[in-house]
Image (cartoon, rainbow, N blue to C red):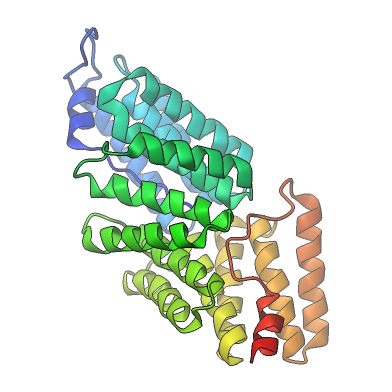
Length: 342
């Protein structure tokens, strides 16, 4: 799951607040920029609290403000990025893709000063393709992104971390585990050292590294990363987001597969509760968690509950456009494979 962030670099703030680029004679007034910032901040707080639909409406309000501004559409592009992130979280990949592409088109028109912003938007699009299982598109765009980013990020550790994690995710999806692990470890180091990085982004990086290590059969190390992914958010009391649900669910499945830990069922139940409260009962991510939950219930000899969970999952799959997200979580089949391996 991707996380939307409101982070205007000082350069972009100056442009928006009265320092237009060459060839531009107008810039938005400070009062309008402040209205946009307030709308973005309010929407971001809603998102962090798990109120995704309300957050989307808030970012739409910010977008409407940005479209009234003269001068380069920098804040409009930032709003598109946030709209793309929340649309992705809500399980609306076509909308998310449209928003990301709109942001990319704006950054491309602004030329060299927008290079870092452009690379970050492309990283968001790579991550969307990964989450929706679009292996070929994720791989092609990730390769172009890696080439375009070479030597371009400078000292911008925030941008570097986001680009690296997106390319790593694409490599994971395409079974290039050596590259995925190398890039993800570098991204984790960057994100953990960056005080400005949100806990959601740090959690996401540890969660991704855990999945890579799990795939490589480094089970103990994978469990450690999964625990870090949940602890980063718990320490900041940020436990209503889809990032937390994803981290908690992966930890639960790892514990169940590796140690038959009875606590896994409760952890997965909590993750399901977070998803229900944040994005409702018709989200494809909920269906994935319910499928795994059904398997754990079956192993716990709770057959009727297992069947009910599986029926609910199937109903959601039938109603959603995307039948299954990209394999970006611990596979329920690992329960069987783990038992055979032992």
